[in-house]
Image 1 (cartoon, rainbow, N blue to C red):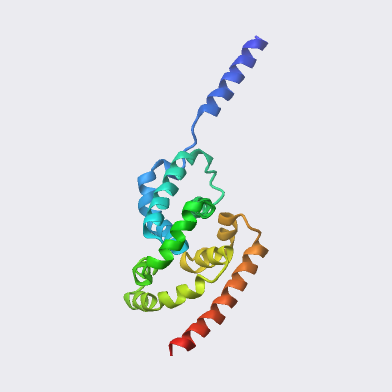
Image 2: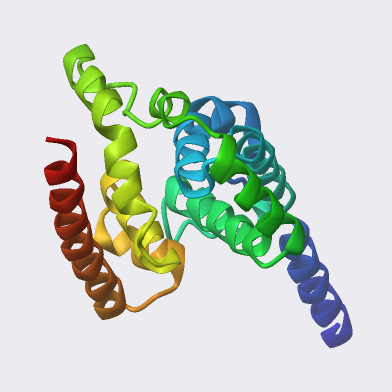
Length: 200
């Protein structure tokens, strides 16, 4: 009788372990529809390459689907997708191929082409027009930042993520995020003022 009880308990535990816990990523089509514009916008702003941003956007959702069982709900879907996208950006910046295309795109990408993707689609039309007109000048200032400063700046002000979400997405301590954000803003203000004076 005792052995039967143990066997029953083990069977019960094995059955429970086999149960797949549902995640928001089970309905990947809905996740893509909701989050694709934001992921693409972040990747485009980070990489300044439309084709590469499109490719990595698709890869972000493919990885999210393949690793959906790892999603524990300890952060938002947006934060988790951003973490995946950020890791993809880091992977690509380490390769020689990316460095080649980065140099090539610096010569060929029109800032006006990128500008259409950067303003948030929910913004009023006049705000989008202003953002589009100034994005080339602003991008010159953002492109002078270090990789970490630029990433944190984009997550905070383009993607409008809270500091806690940035901490979760990047894996950096809050103090480091704040420090990089402060330096980014200081550098942007100084550089933007300098560029504005040159254009007047």
